[in-house]
Length: 496
Image (spheres, one colour):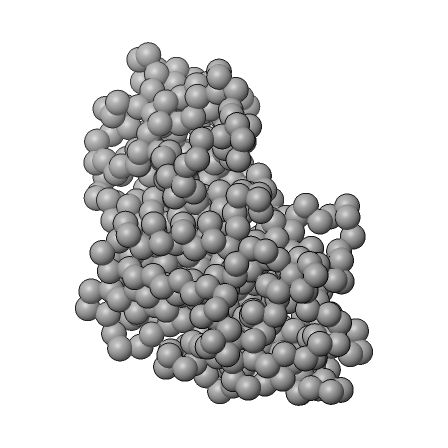
């Protein structure tokens, strides 16, 4: 593009990172210019400054023990932030992320370069991870097209100080949070630069960075020759070539069981010939967030050397109303031989995922999870607090739900039912992608996918709202990178 250097997406999203380390030195002995010390409700300050300066802040009311409250003082040439943590009994990973984001915001106002968090006494590793994750995610800025102001200096280094060695959970959280930020970069990149080919090239460079990660990319001719007629149909209206991205990771000492992660990556969705309303169409660059989460989660697992076996499948297409675009009423044949009546060209994601699910089953994967910005109905049902979870296997659903709770990317299980499956039966083909009647649409879309999953343990995450609309203290710009943390947790649990 004119005005920008021709640089690969991989180079752009991996060129900046906060240095993160664990230390057993006391916070005031580190090289940090700003130190954060937390205080719980009904507790004193564990390590006060000389003269009781921090307790004095609390006594005066300038500081508070309430979560996200920050007060500032100085000691020996450095800044000290006193952070309220709320009740110890409710201080979990999410509370740690919120506290870290609040401290980061105040630290950046003070032009902090090196920030040191004193780990509260007697807390589990999820708190360690939360402090790292909240800081890294809160520091995210998307500056490819609009550079940051010259006087805005990002945080350079984060230190976590603890009495015991927390290097393991610090490293793991740093890797996963960096992967989530890369996923946010992919989501925020506009569709003229993030084409299906560009996303495939990015995945290729990611695989080249990790010895145990392999990638295969299929183009239009190969997709069609394999019989993936549903995926191919979605791409018919665009000059941009579709890409099926296959990522294979075989970790050291991995068990035999293999998990398939499938991501929808419609790099731009106009709705095809069922054109979307203009006011919200710019948001349709985010229709690839499921694919970005899969790519980055697998990259994080490879960087961690996780003992798991993963097949990643990302169907990358553009859905445009070109001269060759699929028309309402057209009938196409999916990879498993199912005929699909395309009554709504804007219900394209389920067609992409259907062929990918069949491919994963043919590969012999023991369980399948797919992520997609699939339906507005799930946003109407759950808002921005949860992604919708659908599954044909209770054990897998419980594992996904637990992974969401641990990671802070929570899901809420919604029903499958033969009534919803009946809505997907076509008049002239086996299936229609426009369920009738127009009720229970998130469940009906899930039943469309269930048709392809069959009896293989399968879970579907409908993540439309949480992918780019949900906002927290540590996620306040565009794409959220939702799913990276959940998928890594799920894979690590699946591998045990």
